[in-house]
Amino acid sequence: MIELEGTKVRDTPVNLSDCLVQDGRPDRVEGRHVNMPIELGSTMVFDTLAEFERARDARYESGTLYYGRYGNAATYKLETMLAKLEGAEAVTLTSSGVAAVSTTLMALTRPGAHLLVADNVYGNTRAFCDGLLTQQGVEVEYFDPMIGAGIAELIRETTAAIMFESPGSGTFEMPDIRAIAGAAQKADVATVLDNTWGTPVFSQPLAWGVDIVVYSGSKYISGHSDCMLGITASNAAYAKVIRKTVMQIGDKTGGQEILLALRGLRTLKLRLDHIDRAGREMANWFATQSQVKTVLHPALPSCPGHENWARDFTGAAGLFGVIFHTTNESAVRAFVDALHHFGIGVSWGGFESLVLPVTPVRTATGWSEPGQLVRFNIGLEDLESLKADLLAALPLLDP
Ligand SMILES: Cc1ncc(COP(=O)(O)O)c(C=O)c1O
Image (tube, rainbow, N blue to C red; front, top):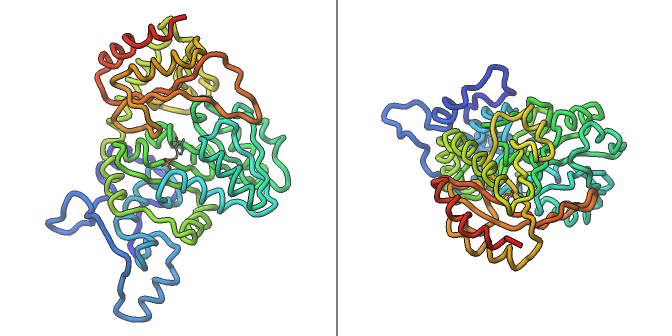
């Protein structure tokens, strides 16, 4: 068993910058490297049967060295560091953000359970809820992401959990996280928040009353589009059941991914401080262009839930939506294809700018905004280059 420090719910404020530099590193021995080594391995061996049995019996506990699938020293360093950043009882890593969402929802539901899901969740979360969870006999009900405290009226005897995002994927409505978490707590229902956009740099959802926060670590946490990773950070009530579910399913994070995430974390605050400013500058710039109808960026008043963002978050990610006046599909395709500095791709939060047209899928609330929604991810390029690139292509969207 490795000694773990800092996994308890945060009682003293964590110095974010210090933690990002100092945690998740080799233990204090002389002549140590600055970084953890890549740990590769399956079998771990023990000198006595008694030691082996102790490890086997504690295999679902973070810090236990038993077998590669359960984690090694580097896994636990990263989990402990993330738990500290998040103010969580514990973090369990998974092989992707999708795996973090699906294992968490599996851990919380049973056949016959009712699951409330925000209508603007990430497409693969919706696919998992409508697919495997529904097949397993879970009743999935979508709700208006801006429902706030009104969620209380949807909670039933059988409601096991509420799944939502900050902000919604593609459409960027920022929910009233505190109101939803408060109503759920009163009814003893678990809340799961996908806070991939918010990151622990800008937000502390567990302190706001959320039970479980999930991340795609493939985005800002690793930050270089070279890593697939999922993170589940939970309070004391849910830490064990989530870890056990992930372990029983056999999900596993690779040794290289652990190191890439630790490396990405070192610059997380620096990158996000820049991206916060750059994203807002670009969002405000878009709002002045004649082809643009609305900008959906939580830091701008034009975005639904802006007041929730302003109350709770200390900054904004570089991912936002722009609704263009045009509905001419071939013009939108020509515009996207004409951009040189924006790659066309799904996974955001790296160093590179991206563009992607989005067609929201809604079943509870509908999506009635006329115009074409396009999602932009602002990376670390020169903003003048990005603007020049866009200025050259925007006339393709003129009537
Ligand atoms: C909000 C959100 N959650 C989860 C995921 C899934 O993460 P991953 O790609 O690491 O499986 C994504 C990926 O785009 C996402 O945008």
